[in-house]
Length: 149
Image 1 (spheres, rainbow, N blue to C red):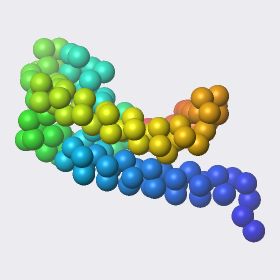
Image 2: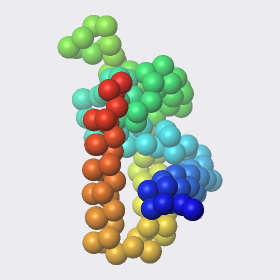
Image 3: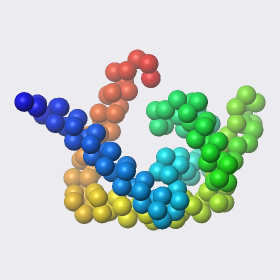
Image 4: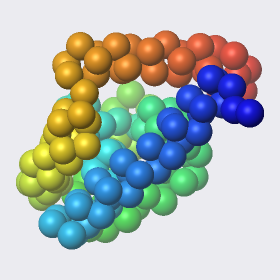
């Protein structure tokens, strides 16, 4: 018999996979853009002065090596560019290019539409805020409980 916490885990993980796959599919079909790239472009759009690869890796809880490879691909597509970090000669800063801002704008239309279809059409605003708050508390507690982070 499944307990409530196991059921929550099962639903969270399976819904995340379904949601990711649906949004990724829509972004690829309409913008030729991977959801992973889109998420990094969204992050960069909030960092006008650029962001270090380490900062991107920390945000998405992925390795620096993996992040660097994804950034390499996004840069090769012309959506971001690296430049020297004026505060640390050993690192570089990654920032959106004009083409990156353009594809992000197009992708945001698709992203927002899919969120409206898959979340907004099902849950009211109060429930969305409550679920979001609960998930944020769980993420914070989980990060605190993991000494390797």
